[in-house]
Image (tube, rainbow, N blue to C red; front, side, top):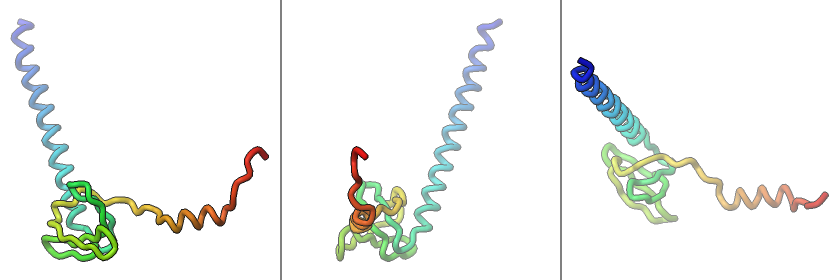
Length: 107
């Protein structure tokens, strides 16, 4: 009798696992689609191929990304993997170090 309950229990567990996995994937795809549709000029992004750049122009299906000063490339929105947090510029970091001055060690 115990052996006859194991197979249905395994099937229920497997179906539950598959349902939860599909639900999570659907939610992630929806979040990615929302992020891609909310891109605006000035956003720093990373493409699916790993290219970092700044969005300079957008339209319904494509975006234009500046990858270096004066170098612009056109991409479909779906090629953007994620928005990247703005990194501190080198000048800002140097200004912070100069304002703080050298730290005396051993005091």
